Length: 259
Image (tube, rainbow, N blue to C red; front, side):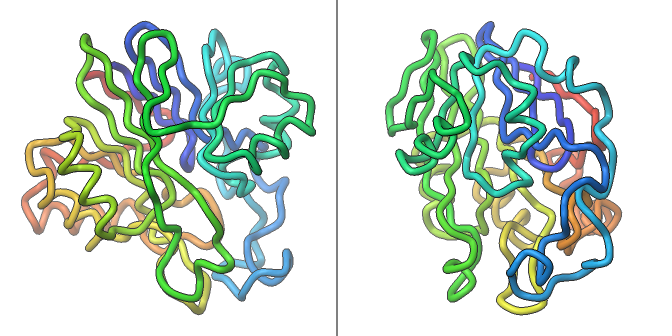
């Protein structure tokens, strides 16, 4: 497999001969409002900066070239935005977490939508919808539902894309059940000024490592939207101190890994 980290949670995954685009946020730098009070959410860091905070590392045409299917874990605009809606062909195969998201995407013109289940099969590749919690406690009311997905195929290592989730028992259970060799975690510790982490921070990444110490863990969703709370530099320092840098990878935008 090849995992090409684009920006934020946007990845192009080549797996068992098929090419998946995950959580496309394709907007140009600064063309979307910040998360926080300007859009009716709780106050957030850097509300004076529009999203995305950084440019795409390559052109939209390059990102969507020869994509076989799109996976949208949820409809927050840093995972599915107007630029993606406009750029992607309306007949492309598209997977969502639930029927509500499928209906909303269908209303923008997409025709070939399937809701992920616990045993979805696409072109011989098993796609397993996994649970995710986009925060802890009361903030979940603002964050809403999301999911992750496990990829399985006899010719590939097992891949777990955890999605927008903090570390909690269901993530542990996915790792225990499916024993993924490759794990992609959203690790920017994004949060508002109240309510705590919405996705994994460095301690959550360490829990993921302890749960699966022989896996490669790829940390994404970093420094791309205004409410990020953990920088790449700080995470790299942490994993070096814990002596786990050979297993925990922190890609720059545009970086690729093959396994």
